[in-house]
Amino acid sequence: MSENRWLATGNFFTSYKTEQRIFLTHIDRLVFICFLVLLFAWPLIFEVGSKYMLVVDSILIAIVAVYGLNLLTGFAGLISIGHAAFVGVGAYTLASFSRILGSDHILLTHFWPLMILVAGCVGAVIGGVVGLPSLRLKHLYLVIATLSFQMIFQWFINFTKFFNQGQTIAIGRVYWFTGEVARNEHYFFWYYAILVVVVILGFAVRNLLRTRYGRCLVAVRDNDRAADAMGMHPGFTKVYAFALAGFFAGVAGALHAYLWRGVGFESFTLHHSISYLAMAIVGGLGTLVGSFVGPAAILMLELQVENLAEFVGHYFTALGDVATAFRPLSFGLVIVLFLMFEPRGIANWWRILRSYFKLWPFRY
Image 1 (cartoon, rainbow, N blue to C red):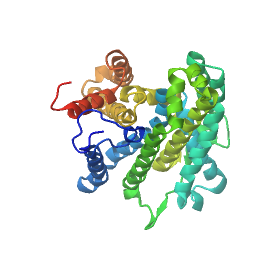
Image 2: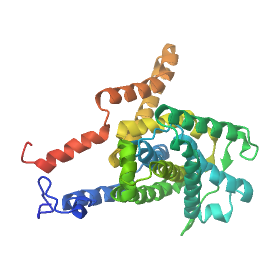
Image 3: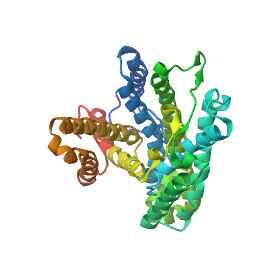
Image 4: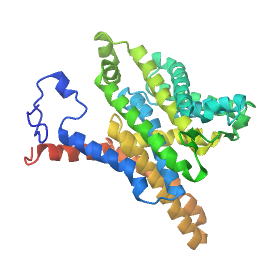
């Protein structure tokens, strides 16, 4: 690459090592650090209500879940519409400990980082098992297999007494170095905890894609026969992609359980699976940036549409039925418009913007 790492124009890579750097220029690194400092500092500067802090926390949890779905669908090319069930596996792992040991057991309240990791591992195991049909199935048939897992998960939770037949199972308040996290600091505390998880897992995904295991996912997506001819194992790669997706979803499910201080069936339905897929599509499949902007765009859209529906229902009571249809209408419309006019998602806008500054002051 160019010797000037601050304002490098164009690509001048002289080795694979330089091409695989996380930050191609010092400017990229500086912008990332400033953005990270801003993310950690803004709650200390601006006063935010619990409602909006909950929305921000939910966006961060969705980012963790979409990490896994993007690896599975975006990079490995395996479409899944049962991702909410994987998230539910992580959440109900904590619920299982709560039912056996009690909601305020020391494992759940004091060793919560360990429990989040355990939930991720359980999700990875279930993901690997669910991924076994991918050894023989492709495309629409694999979609139906993941849909079957979603339906089986919903049936199992709804008709199992151990899981309270889908009713809420409480999770106790966690402890930090200063003691039990207070009620008024709950969303504030989990914002920082989830943000740390998002940053760590984001770097993990970025580094994974630089390794041969990450490149295997892309190779199998593009042409599994060619990947097999080059010495890769397409079957193992597909199962391992499902296991990765299950791990990220399991971590997201555990964070969801701790944030809401309970686990309920309503958060892991087919509607949520489609929402996760929409987040990946709108953000940009096969891009790490898409995993950030997709959940933020979809959840903020849902919040604004909900506010609009309340306004319409309050002032125009005759249009109450129309107001309730705003959310599904806007949701479907956004997906269709992005598939038609911007199939590469919002991440493509970021790519164009970066390319402009990378080539400036030249036009080409």
